[in-house]
Length: 305
Image (tube, rainbow, N blue to C red):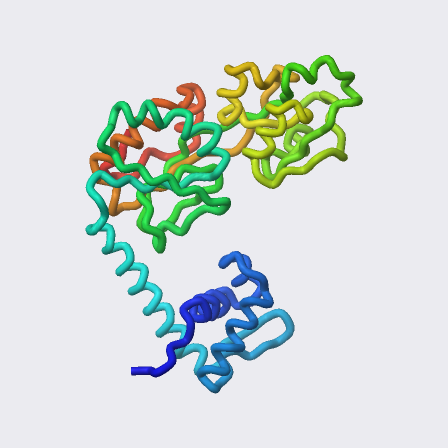
């Protein structure tokens, strides 16, 4: 038995760098800085008293010792992930763990959870939000619902809804001259370039203004009358119903695709099935129909709605 085990974070950093052939790409995958990855690997090499990489500019290749350690490390991480998944059997009865983005949770899901609770009062729902898509193979999750999901191993992936975008502001801002309205900028699809590229009309948007990295904050700012914003039809529906947002144009442009991942270990769980059925029934019917045309039929399994 080793007296001093290498830190798990250092082994994860080593495995990512070895698999990707780059400290920079490993840092991006693990949401760390490149210097942090470099420091982890230097510490690991010092602990093992031998080099693991040949460093050639920005690219790295494994030494013989590194190749040997990579096989061991990947086996270790797979066994650890499998062991963590097995802990599911000790969870509380009727527990349902759902991951989503902060914007979807705040502006769509949470306002509707009372309805789900009335239908399933015994459900012990855990709502976990994250800025980035989760790794369903290593995290204990039943369902992920997001606009940034791709297929993952051991999961059923389904496109749920094709979102649309439109420019909007608080009704009180309509009395302000167009050239005096502040422009609110978002990231990814919520950026005004999406509106312009797809042929949206000029509604007074300008390059300067305020910038928001999170769609929920952008929508909050628009609802509070701060300026005009390009908003998600799905996320902004409740604000429009409450009179907090007014569309500035009748046109709509293509937005993000919302989808789910259901882990194969959870797909036959009656509570997971009920949650997914409730979710599908709660989404706008015309949008889910459009999404259905964009994706193949669900893979064979318990979730087929």
